[in-house]
Image (tube, rainbow, N blue to C red; front, side, top):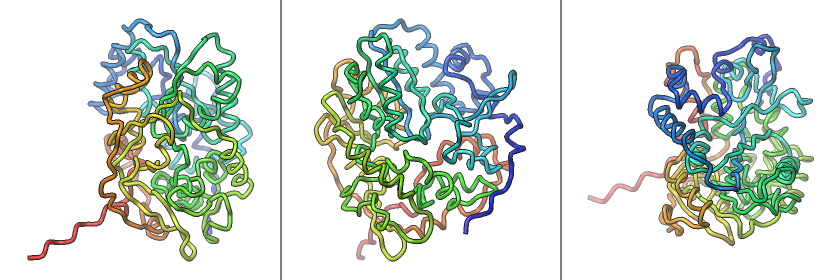
Length: 437
């Protein structure tokens, strides 16, 4: 049984500290470079991250533009802030990701269709500002292409291609993280896509991700940690009534055969009990995958490795069992991130940290300029993958207790939000057998 809906709309008319702290990229860059609002920004980012971003902001503001082709930066799923307007002079009501709204049950407002109630409010600064500033400091003009990550990827691809087509630039480049890479991949085949010179794909699930299946089942770490904040709903409610209404989640499901898994576009291959996908969206996702062109020679992939990642699943009884190994970035299996035909580079890095990584950022600059890099290895030895198998039932034992947000320190709150996707303890590799005496 899912919890009954409870009205918490009064909270959404209140302005939270997270609403007041939201700045657009231009304002934030100026503040970081000048030192304005230092105290509040240190609270948002933490002292080490603030110091790095401030240095990058100063470099970015001083750097002249040296490259004609602008770089489109595409966030991944959940990488764009969503909210609604308030009457001036009040700030916009930030829903994703404002923990105060999450605590009050506000994630229910993400449910589709929302009749246009939410709009995009810029990329998540913690995830994407550092990469944006590195590109600008290297002389690139950067266009952050924010989008509503709940929507059908076909629609998002058409919007992106139309933006390229309507622009005055003869050529553009793309740096795309996670699902943003699938949006770009679909857009390359549309009018406007011919203008794209290079695409750098950071942890892009070219053949899907098992995290999408877990999001629908309510066993994905992010869903469970959000539910631990939510005072009104549990993870199963959020999975079925919210995340399972998104076309994008269904289009991110792993392709048939990835990791020798069953065809998840077939409803009968899902457990009969608990949260399940929308059959109509499943069929649309299958159609999307069939239409999606293969990545072409313009695309380069940077793949995270050596993170505990679900690499396949099976249906046993009435629940999924997930096979976990080191072959991925924690979200996207290496078998999905790696290009079948094309240049692949590898880095020991977690999925959400790829856009923030300095070593990844330097490799991105090389790839944009030269179409190659020596900063990351172009080969990856599989090694011992240290597999474990974890069930839905085991994952549902995690983060069941509600978080007392009011009692957390500022640093603890920041850490909680920045680590929503941290692997659960059940993913830990097996301990080596003790040596015989």
